Length: 367
Image (cartoon, rainbow, N blue to C red; front, side, top):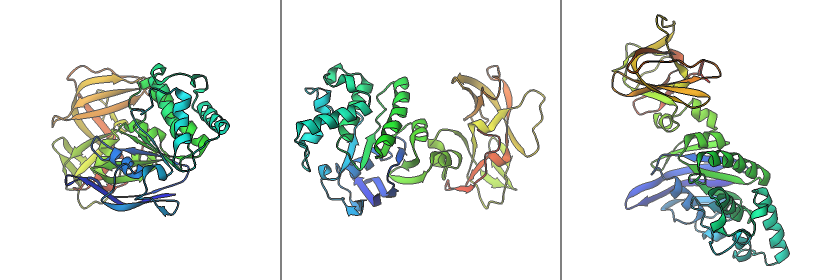
C-alpha cells in the first residue's frame, strides 16, 4: 500500500531521519514509539508533505508521491493540538475539508450533511454538531479533529501523539475508541507516541525509532518479549539492564557473575524483564539453573493489578521486580532491607557489545 524507501532528512547537518524504509500494509494499525527527539514527528511531516526529504521516496499504491503537495496525497493528518477553527461549530469544522479540498470537493449540501452526520455518529459526537470549539472538552476536540480527517476518506491516517494532551482516564477510553473507529473504516493508522504502554496496546505492528533510525518493526508482543537491541529494551521500559562482559562462560558485572545459557562469543549487556525476577523469602535457596544478586529495598509502587518493588543494586543503579497480584500475594520489606533477587538464567536476554540481541530465549515463568 505505502512504501517508504531510504527516507532521509537533516536539519543544520543533524540527521532527523536516517535512511528510513518501511512497508505499510492496508488496513493495519501501526504505532511508532521513540524517545523525545527520535524523529517521530519529523517522519510524519515528511509523509504528509509538510517537510521535504533530502533523499529517498514515498510511494502510495504504486505512485511516487514524494514531491506531491500535502493536499494531493490522500493522506490524513491528526495533530496533537487539534488545529480546529474556533469560529466554526463542530459540523462546519468536520465539513471544511470536504467543501474546500482542491481535489474533488463536495459541493452538494445534502451529500456533505450525510457524510458529516455519518462520521460524527462513528466518533460519538452526533449530539454535539452545533457546539463551538470552545464548548468542547479535550477528548471531544480530539474526536472532532479525527472526524475532520476521516470524513475525507484518506488512504492512510497519520496521528501525531493524538492522546498526549488527554488525562489518563480519557486516554484509556480513546485508546479503545481509536481502534474501533479504524476497524470500522478499514483505514490504515500510523500513530506516533512516546508512551510505550500505548504503543504496545494499540498496534498491529509497532515501530521503534531512535535518532531517526528504525531499530525494529514487529508485532508488539514480539518487541516486548524479544527486543532486537538494548535500546529497544530500554524504550519499552520493562527490563532491568546490566552492563558487563563475558568471562568464563558467565556474564560478569559489578553486581555479580550470572550464568549464561547458550554459546555466545561476547556480551556487553544482560537484560532481565521486571516480571521474570522474584525476591527469595528468608532462608530460601537459589534454585538450580537460576541467577541471583543481592540488592537493598528502596520502595514499592502499587499499580492496581500489580506491585512494583524497587531495589538498589551494588553499582548504585536500580532493579525492579513486578509481582502480579492475580498470581501472588503482596510482600512487605523494610527500607534498606538486604534481599536476594532471583531469576531463571534462561529468561535473561543477552546482547553483544554493540547492543544487538545475540540470544533469543523464551521467557519461562514470565507473564
